[in-house]
Image 1 (cartoon, one colour):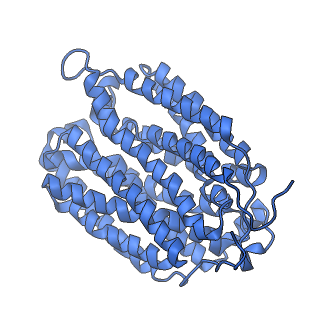
Image 2: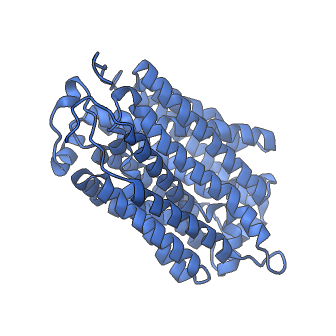
Image 3: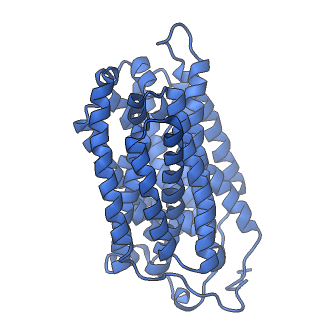
Length: 427
C-alpha cells in the first residue's frame, strides 16, 4: 500500500545507514593513493602525475557519467541506481586489490570504481527526500559525514598499512596488501547495501514542494533558468574544486614544511574530522532555524582562515588547527548546499540538481589539479628540492585563497532562504 503524503517511516534510517556505509567505501577508494604518492611512484616506477591521475580519474569520469547516473537514479529509484554503483564498487575494489602489482590493471579497476561513484554521490538528496523537511539537511549531512570518515581512513590507514608492509629496505613497499584490504572493505559495503536497500517513498513537503516532479530532461533544462542555481553551480565549482585539489596535493604541500608522510596523513585526517563535525553541526543548525543562505555564507567565510594557515604556517600545531577549520566549514556547508539546490530547483528531481552542482565541483577540481600539476613542477625531483617545491605550491595556495574570497561574495548574492516552512501536520 502506498504511504500517504507527509508520513515518514522508520526504515528510512536503515536505508540512510547502508547508503552512508557505501558512501564511506567509495570515498576511501578515491583517495587510497593520495597519502602514499611518493611510495607508489617508487613501487610502480612512474611519475607523480600518473599516481595523481588515479585520484583524478574519479573527477574526470564523473564528468562523463554524472548525468546518465542522475537519469537512472531519478527514473528507476535508488535501489537500481545506487545498486549499480554498489556492484561496481564491490567488484572493482576487490579486483584492484587482486591485480595490485600491475599498474595497468590498477588503472582499469580504479576507473571502474570511478564510474560507480556518481551512482552513489548523486543520490544523497534523493535518499534525503524520504525524510520530513525539518530533517533533510541533516539527512544529507550523514552520508557526507560517512564520505569523510572514508577519506580519514584513506589518509590515516594507507601510510600505516604501507609502513607495516615494508619488505626490504626503505624503498620497498607492499602496495598489494594495502589495496586488498580496501578491496575487502569495498565488497562488504556493497553486499550490505544490496541486502538492505529498498526504494523509499519521498515525503512530500508542503507548499511549493507539492508540485509534480519534472522529467529528467525537462528538469535539466529548467536548472539553468534559475539564478540561484547558476550561482550555486559557481560556488561548488570553486568550493569543491578547492577541496579536491588540496586533498590531492596535501602531502606535497606539507612535505616542504618538514612533515613526514605520517604527519601529513594526520593533518589530512584532522581536516576530515573537522568536516565530519561540521557536517553534523552546520546542517542541523540550518534545519533548526530553517535557513540555508546564512549557514552557507558562514561556512564559506569560515574556511578562509584555515586555508591561510595551510598556506603560510609551518608549525605542526597551527597546521592541524588550520586543517580542522578548513574541513569544518567547507565540508559542513556542502550538505546545506545540496539541500538548498533541491529546494530552489523544485520540481526538478533531486539527483538531477545535486548531480549538476557536484559536476561543477568536479570540473573545478580537474581544472585546479591540472594547472597545479602541470605548472607547479610536481615531480619526484622537486620533492628532493624542498625550497623549490614549497615556492611553487605556495603560489597556487595564494590563488586558492583569492578564489575562496570570491566565493563568499557570490554566496551573498543568493536568495535569502530556500527552505519551505513546515505545515502543522507534517510528521
